[in-house]
Length: 160
Ligand code: THU
Image 1 (cartoon, rainbow, N blue to C red):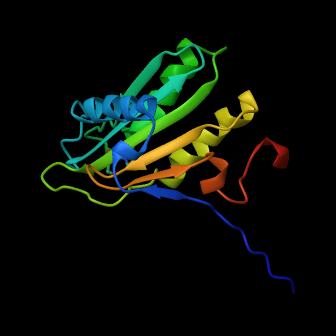
Image 2 (image 1 turned 180 degrees about the horizontal axis):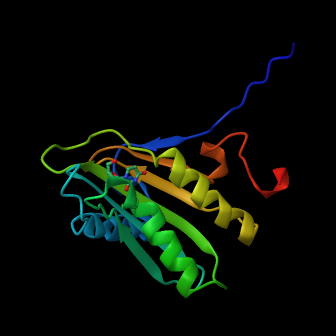
């Protein structure tokens, strides 16, 4: 028997003011996108904003459906659109904000496992890390230097 230990480094900032202006701007875009989420079933609203290497910002939010599994998370809505429209651009960083409609979320809410898996694909395509910033609706912001950092022992094409 051998024991493996997998580390994951996260930095947590107390407020948005501690972050560089361009990251604050990206999170603001995510907050704006969150306001337009289509989430009539869960009432849980998520907004995501991606910054591309050409400086463009792409946003997305969760899109739910009466047939529940047909809906899609905010992160995937944003990244699929980004790569469909700008396949040659790298994704430099991503900001996410999430929380229930009528309740403030004061601690960072990380992307779900399915989104981590979807996001890591693009990190591998571009062979460059995607910086990730995620928060609830107010308060602390968590930072991960890459997607793979929060998806240890990733399943990827090397296994196929
Ligand atoms: N959701 C996201 O948009 N991103 C995540 O990473 C987790 C969950 C959405 C899906 C669904 O519309 C709602 O939040 C509740 O799960």
